[in-house]
Length: 74
Image (cartoon, rainbow, N blue to C red; front, side, top):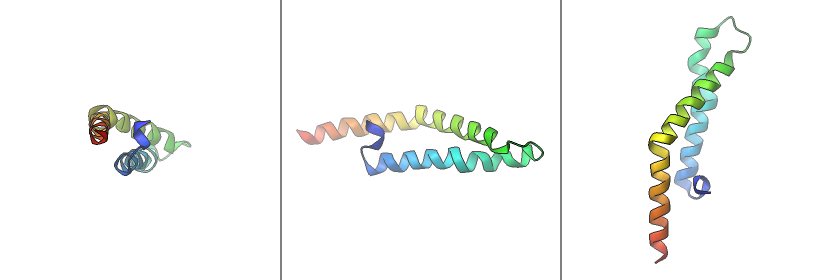
């Protein structure tokens, strides 16, 4: 489980959580003022952005960290 193996990776996961649960709903709330479930669209937007960021940057960082961690053993 690479995503919880270092303080840097934990920080990245917290950043993705903030995007998903706070920034996403904050962005979509003004556009869904009369809808009873305003946060659902925000969660969906934040989750989508988090997934794209993970696919573009986070996965490469995790692989680099995993590779350098294995190098330190030898």
